Length: 106
Length: 122
Image (cartoon, rainbow over all chains, first blue to last red; front, top):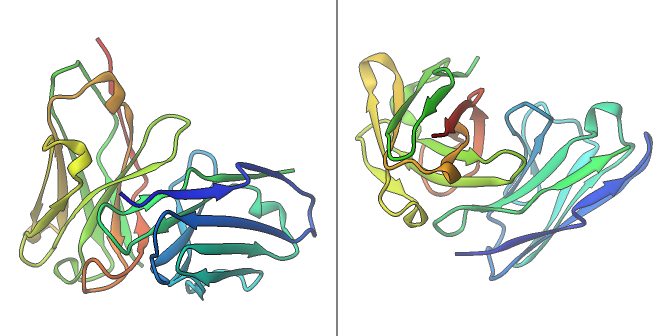
């Protein structure tokens, strides 16, 4: 299985900050990577697919980059709604695998 | 709008089986696969597999050791997840999720159900 490792596990920030979350794959996944946001008690929500393509309706302050094994999610000008847990996921190989999550807290 | 509405919470004893349903609306059910993802309390996400809405083809995670299967009722636009031989460690929220692409296996997961909590307890 492809292991997905996110860093950091927890990130403390303030409204208006710009934050970056890293995701590393144990082998190349090209750009077959998605990012999801999960608020407490809710289902995950797709933010970005194909490493850098913003899903419709997602604010432009979210952006993704990377390829092969190294990826990042950047959130510019953090808003109160952005305090949540973020997961990366690869869909290059079965089984699809997720990172362990990065909690963005105030 | 796309909606996936799942069945209610279940409490099962170890060794039992469970069936969770997922009713789809707002899109053509047979054009997209439905995936299943679970999340143990306070833990991360685990992909379980998918079922093709058009032909019933399935792909299960080998990590589940053959304890899961998927079916559909296309006339009701509903997908089902069947889990057998439940253990305490299978306590989790189970989500059904729509594939973003009509071609399964090449894209992310765009619309998620609300989740079904399955509690396994003696």
